[in-house]
Each structure stands twice: as C-alpha cells, then as structure tokens.
Length: 356
Ligand SMILES: *[C@@H]1O[C@H](CO)[C@@H](O)[C@H](O)[C@H]1NC(C)=O
Image (cartoon, rainbow, N blue to C red; front, side):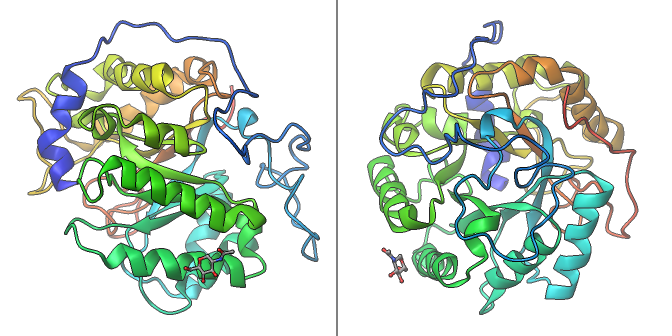
C-alpha cells in the first residue's frame, strides 16, 4: 500500500475518464486456451456455490464441475478482503467467516497478506466450507522484492492438491499483491508463472489470476501477456490515491477511467474489484496525491455508497459485471480501511447491494 500511495497517481492521471462503458456482456469470450471460469452448464442460484441461500451438501460432491455459480452472474458486493498476516486461529477464522457470510451476505473472501504457519490454508478451507464462502486465495509477494513467494507458491499449490475440500472453496488463485507495480517479476516471467500455476491446477479446475492496479500493467507497457494469461481480472481500485481525488462521492470518473482500461484490454474476461476501498485515516503508508483528498469515515462509507449507486452500471460491464470486495474487514488488518474499527465496532452502516 505504501508504494501504491505514492505512485497510483500516475495510473489515474493519464486516462480518459469520460469513456462510456461498453454494455455487451460476452460470457463466452474469455480469450486464450482453457476457460475454467466459463461455466455454461452452471446451476442457477441458489443451487450453485457460493450463492446466497445455497445449502452445503452433507458430503463432498464427486467433483467441482457444475459446482460453482456462473461468474457471469456474479456482480455487486461479493465480500471482503481479509488480511491473514495475524495468522488467525482456526476458531477466529470460523467466527469471522460466519460474520462475513451471515451478517454481510458475502459470497467470497479475498485473502491478503500471508501466514506461513503450517496448515494455515487448511484452516481457511475449513472455515470457508463451514460458512459457504468461496476464497480468492493468494500467493503473497510482500513488499521486499525477495523470493519468499516461491516457497509460499509451492506450499499453497500443494495444499490445494492435498486438501480434498480445497477445490470446492477456492474460486481462484491470485498472484499478488501488485507484482507488476512492485516490479517483483518482469511481466513475461509473471505471465509464465501464471501459466505454470494454471497447468499445476488444471486437474482441480482452479483458475489463476494476478491482483494488480491498472497502473501496474500500464507502467509495464500494458503487460498484455499477463492479461492474456490470467483467467479473471482482479483489479485494485483505490481512487483515494488519484491526483484528482477529493471526496469519495466524486470518485466515479476515477473508477470509470481505470475500469475502461481493463475493458479495452481485458478481452471480455470476468472482472473483480478485489482490492477496493477508501481510507478513513491517512498513515505513513497511506498518503494522498491530491491536496483535496479527504480521508475520514464518512468518505470511507461514501465510496461504498457510490458503488451501490452505480450497481446497474457495474452490472452492465462485460464479463458479467463487476463483483466487488470491500477492502478490508477490520482496521486491525489495514489501518483506516476496516469496516470494523480495532475495537470490533462497525465504523458506519454497511449493507451493500448484492444484486440490482
Ligand atoms: C503442483 O505444485 C506443487 C508444488 O510445487 C507440487 O508439489 C505438485 O506436485 C504439483 N502438481 C502438479 C500436478 O503439477
């Protein structure tokens, strides 16, 4: 987030904000080779996982084909980013995932950060299964530009294979956060990693993506090889850092600008705003690039109100509409971005639309 704060400005300043959305939904144009997110035979909600109202089976199905909801039907608020750097206990994961599902009508959690405790992903799977939540899993690169991610990749891939429930709750595997923006890997090597992970997970039908800013792609010449390799586009939408930021109720053109870039270059793939929010306070790592940018609780709240107001616009975006995550569950996970403060109290009313 620190680097994001400093440089996202460049991402948001160079784009044409006025570009209209393209409305044609193209559920069968997912680009490239294998198309694991394209599930024409999917059952409708509430008979597909993890739709609201879905009843979990008593025993594991024989496989995960016809298990997931068709991603082209998934849009609006889908859940929270949830940082795991605290290495939450299994009990805490169960308790908070239950809250995420039942209190907020979430369908997914998007993992953020890393916990290197042995068996941690098994705890995530257990809590997700128990609470009917899908997971956007994450290979965490951190901010140091080192190679720790390689061990994490291997551990996570192994867990996805060894835990029989993992393929029923893991919707997508992300490389993140912001590996292009942070310049962890040249884009061609990142694209290669995505392809290798897809190959590794192909028998499990788990797709692979990269969690990244528009600017992360743009500053690497567009990194079309990465965009072509990923199965869905997991977008970091953080308009507070724009040079043109003011209050969150004015942020729609900033959102539209970055989104339009992905519409223009994403080949109709499913898109999520997976790291998406507005801070209530600044901190050393969260500094605006506009003198007019306001960080307070009403503006944090206001950003989600804005997304709700544009529910129909976001639904009309190709790929089946934008599914968005709120970044982040608690201030304990990232100061100022939490829906809960660090005392566990909600900072503002939060009941975003899950359909429109
Ligand atoms: C996937 O990667 C993991 C970790 O490197 C490895 O243990 C496993 O054998 C691989 N599986 C396949 C099918 O490639």
